[in-house]
Image (cartoon, rainbow, N blue to C red; front, side, top):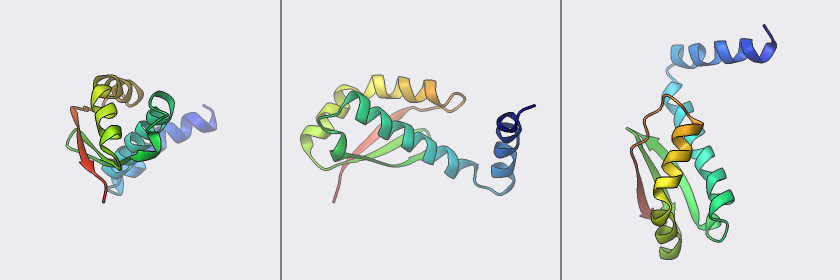
Length: 100
């Protein structure tokens, strides 16, 4: 067993034991979404910010209405990519709001 295999085995157990599993999952999904924006929506990526993932819904703040519209147009592709990148997590939708 390599060090990385050992880490992969221990990390989820440790997070669960300390009650941090949901926070870690939320952070991972937000990070993956930010990467997706940069790769697939480069023109508006700077205007999109994933804030939290809770109860299957990713909350995204948009600085402009154009960014919100672009995200809404590509919502299905984003959700599919997130589902693929974080298997075992049920991702049901986006909640898009205006950034303050």
